Length: 147
Image 1 (cartoon, rainbow, N blue to C red):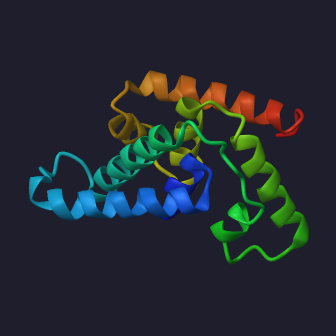
Image 2 (image 1 turned 90 degrees about the vertical axis):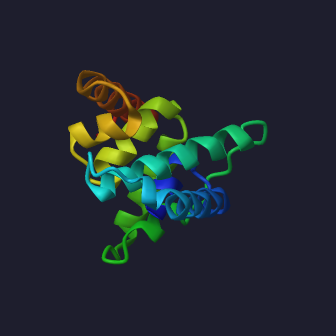
């Protein structure tokens, strides 16, 4: 859940805040879970909402991007080239608009299916596909055309 928050807000301290707010929201509303979706999907929806709330709270200040962000993502990747690639992707994500970035994070970081992303974001599956396509294009452009 923290990885998803981190990729959405793009700042480690803000991701911690969003994660904490999401955990509080989960604790407060666990009795309201109605089993219409998987628990993980419900949790991701809360995490995305907490992340978007955190972005709104911090929108007026500059969004710093830390060089360590993608190295935190996976302890199994140890090569310098892989770490540099992850850092480049994190920097490029900062240039992708929020609506596309959130869809990319849910698909590629949280490994969610399109239907689950649609539920989390409360949008049609076709819109998920569109946002992912546009997000990938913008991410590739931000990385200098590399895919």
